[in-house]
Image (cartoon, rainbow, N blue to C red; front, top):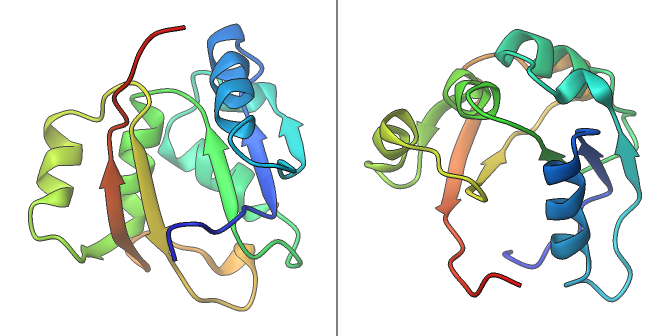
Length: 131
């Protein structure tokens, strides 16, 4: 379902990331709760995974708003496969600003999320007017 509301958003404390979150969250009538986390700024994939694994088991869908190259590397590390044969190659080639990667994973809790265990279900690059 392309209209799933995240149970929690983790957002970098960087101004650009917070502004991205403000614009994105305004698209929902009631946005999900957000937690600003300075560890997301400049984090590599293993550091991002550590933050994700701290997520409460009650959160079913998690949204990360952060920075590259860490986010692209995290997508590549987690995605053991993709629904679209070319999606992982596109992430390797370029994961542009505002790109959205949707990964599906089923596990008992976030601590069990490990590299290669998720499925990349969508890769989107929104295009639109600049405010």
